Length: 218
Image (cartoon, rainbow, N blue to C red; front, side, top):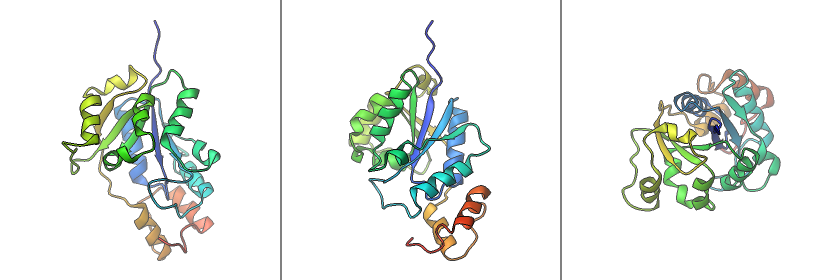
């Protein structure tokens, strides 16, 4: 009997810097959905927001420092190695090519889902991966429009389905809401304040040693 491998989680972002909000969400979803791993993929050049303050090399190094002792989380430098604008559809195509029998689960916050129809070739993404939406109670799913249509077509209430097919479903999964802002962390560092307990000690140590964000345009 053919056995489909455990689903893999994918969490992309600028990680400028990575903090406990990113990490807690990744770990909770890893555990709640029985994922094989969650890959953290720092983007090289975001297409929906301003360019990151830290260099791609610093952001990659901070992600590596953050997950050093957590085997559930892996770092993937594909977008940084590829350079250019970071389109998730291209990254998922690459992952699908290299993991042809593994279900892929693209993790995003519900705020990102609301902007999903503006993503490059977004209609193709559900052919490549499931969407796992980290749901927070204060957000409400629209009742009309493109996002509402996607939810009506693809929403599944049993999370186990992500292990039974390669792509095509949407799961809403509650997570602990940690309202931590990378922008606020950068501001605190630029002002000489201590952002400890908002991000891993290993990341803070890297920032201190390399002078990241000390003087920056927030």
